[in-house]
Image (cartoon, rainbow, N blue to C red; front, top):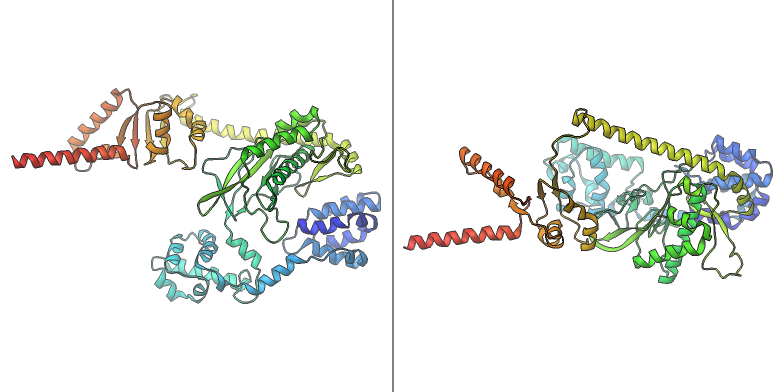
Length: 568
């Protein structure tokens, strides 16, 4: 259920707990496939009418329907059993009205060339059609309105290099979308689904991993793998937070408090989780859930805020545990038009069983005044992937069941370790295959292959990530970075580590224009030269400007000498 819809229920939660008759309502919701057999059983097993109502609403909050709106179905069924309660709740409202209005104004003719190409890209990939088609569409300025008019003859004229079947598949995909209603040319169609198809997807950083130097999110794109799997303690639950319009101090307060709520909820539920600051939570229709927006706060301020929040929110005897469970902040740059415009702050929470066993984690709001109402300690748990403070009854129930969560976490960690060990067994099998039963391959010739670095990396980052290269005895280095002498690893090793290498170009190994015996003689000489030199060969595969300039100056000098000889 969308958070905005749950908030409508939450406004009247006390009245619903007191008056809702769950027994009849659960049957109707079961018939509409909102509840499963297990859900129905859990609700009806509660002993009092109020507990049945609470359990029904708790489960309803986690539900989604593929073809329909959970909140709307709930209201319809509630009107059948208790119409006065249905009248008390707000209607589905703005999201549906906006969607209807947008539907009336949107059609395929509005797609410009870039949008049309973004829409067609996954369809081409599905049918194994070369994406050069998209380049041609951009060159020919084919937009949505032109695409609608294209037939087989015009397709053949525009895409002569495509096979007949490939051209036909593109037209079939277009017609199928029109006929199925997924993309209508008239006044009907679901604009929200079309817009989401047009938004490129991003994959979120993997849990408990460093941020790679080339790992970036594009602003406005959707993080794909944010699904929450209830009951799975190892695969992380994801919690997205944005704070548009807040000043710096308020934004930092939000980071501190939201991180502590989410972290303590993960620790209490014994489940891994990641909180993403700068990613939209989908609470209304202005943006999509998981949409990358980014933040621009100073990174050190964020880190200091998290450290202080742990000290201020957790009891002193649990601060060390919290610091171990809450991993250091990760920063993923956000780019817009190829320029970095902010970052996503991501914090992983990993409540290992050895750390959290037998403990309940209460926190207090560090920003509340000591005697202010509601400033007492609270116990948070995850509900629909978001932290929610427990009632007194909920706390009492948790205290009696937390040992069960400890056992489940312990079992989940064992299963995860076993799976990891299985992966290691595959590595051992590969070693056996390569080494013929020995523990190593015998003579090892370490070769380093280097690609261009991200130009935004600072010298400190290069040192932190690549200083280990200086510790290896490389037989040979192949460098594909033509500007490595300015900002790459070559510059770092020669300037910072004061290392020296034998510089070579791929042209040195070029045998074109040589007779066989000459080529062989030159190869032997090259090999002897490399083996006898105490300098390791550094081969620039995409050119090396200083060395090329030397060669160019050498040949210019030889040409001048030849001219002088002719004059004599």
